[in-house]
Image (cartoon, rainbow, N blue to C red; front, side):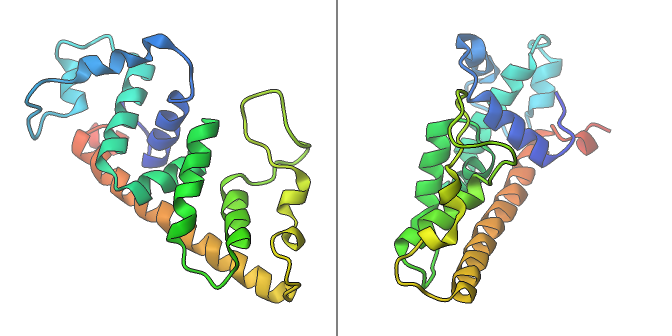
Length: 191
């Protein structure tokens, strides 16, 4: 299994964790006691584990990234790209206290939630799926604080908060790329 990009690997791995499939733990067969430096997933795949499924590899990548990334980076990726409701919420809540802003706590929380769960066109309120969809009022900055501050101030706060979490995601993807390159599972590494 070779991924075309770091983002593709991250999204695929985070999507795999949301699938309720008892066989998804098969990725654990990739573990070898005394894991040696330089033994990558591609080598394991060519050796005795030639029948790996995409789910096996996605789950292995999920576990590898989760164990290797610092919590801030892991939470930034999970908040932005996870499809698992509770893990996405937990990641969002873990990011909120890491952001320095003059904005009130409620404003900060709403800004991070709307960054992680952007409004979907044509979707109104909750859906029957497990996808997180926020109510329309959630995206109205007038509901984010009660002091009646000018819109320009609120827009600046939101822009700066989004800039911080975007930077966290950028840093996390760079770190994830390093991990995936070391494992030899990005397409440019296959040549």
